[in-house]
Image 1 (cartoon, protein in one colour):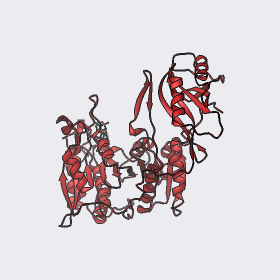
Image 2 (tube, protein in one colour; image 1 turned 120 degrees about the vertical axis):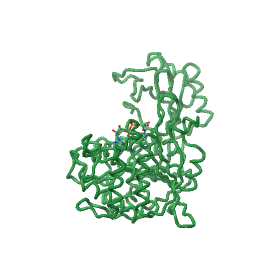
Image 3 (cartoon, helix red, strand yellow; image 1 turned 90 degrees about the vertical axis):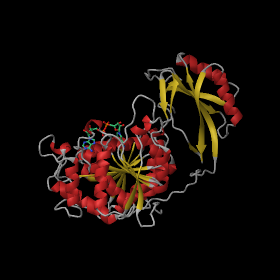
Image 4 (cartoon, rainbow, N blue to C red; image 1 turned 120 degrees about the horizontal axis):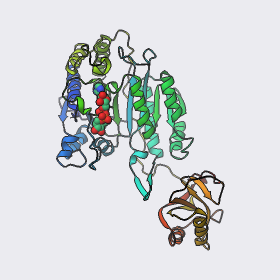
Length: 490
Ligand code: NAD
């Protein structure tokens, strides 16, 4: 897919630069100096987002002027933005990711010379490719009863395909041989399972790359035990959030962890770390993470030579033992942010003595159809209804009552469950109940298709005596049930 960037008549690529909050302005200034010294043809548009914007009363933390700049430039280098706690505003970071549908979060980590960790010498060098907009992070939450909360986990076939293709393309661009997909498909067969099935289908198109599914908890275990076995890990949003913080700890911490948020239209480059307010203005913070984020940005806009010069400069600086407080502590040996930046500038393009450098090709952005009706079915029918009710009745009484209420309708009560476990008709399970039940009502006719009126009638019948708060149609698509069974349901 064609990369969208804005090149000025003088041949410079426009980039929106957001200094951000706390330590942001210092580390972003360091990255800017280094990028300019490397000779990259960039014209910056400096814009605001984050704390200063919240203070002006803009609840999203991102002013219109910044949004317009990003629409124009399509490329952003940003510092961390503080997320206000406790007064209702949304995270400006999440706003930016969602506004520009940056569906892929790429987080590379590698061993750095001189940065001692328990893993030093093992050659950790991997990339986490995290889905960035779906999953539990869609933020669709409800209190279903006063005491029971729900968060919807939404995973789409299209969203999965986009992130999986991006992951394989990252592997190709970086000459990597192996891609893992980490999911919890063994438990969440439909949501995490959709990511797994999509991975298995898409992997066939990349026969040159070894593709392997791994259960996410085992992936975490393996990452701590033997991280050098991983090359690229593609994963869902929540899994990726957790795994990528783990992987940044393998190589020396947040000061060294860059990231790219990739969308079809816009790409946003930033360090993984936050605004670390207690270090703001002290000239002690490690700018490497944002400098390496700028390297990812330079590759994105095709400035491969400047990107390589900076990567070499950073590695040579570290090889020469120029390290900061986050590695060497508060001893007199720690370089300041500005001294470290100067050292990188002096070493731009200097080949590291021993640290390995990859040969990068530009990343090909995947093309995935923009059709909203992405998966077609030839046959579909509604085979039942799940009605969720709030009730303080003993479950035997609730079950009998719901069964009686639907007598004469096309459905029978198949079961009542509590938080995923069938408890009516009684199974002997020792389930501790709360005031939240799901009544599964299945149509009697084996091949029928419930009409809208019949579904609404079933809900009205149950609702006549019980407080319902959620209804889910039970669909069958091309003969395959689009719902899972409760624990203990046959
Ligand atoms: P943080 O990453 O800001 O800081 C945690 C600690 O990590 C710091 O105290 C420091 O010891 C260390 N650290 C972070 N960056 C470093 C660097 N470059 N060099 C050396 N050490 C570094 O995390 P936090 O304290 O949880 O969050 C502070 C604020 O940042 C919050 O408002 C949070 O919402 C925000 N945040 C923003 C982003 C983003 O903009 N993408 C990401 C994470 C957190």
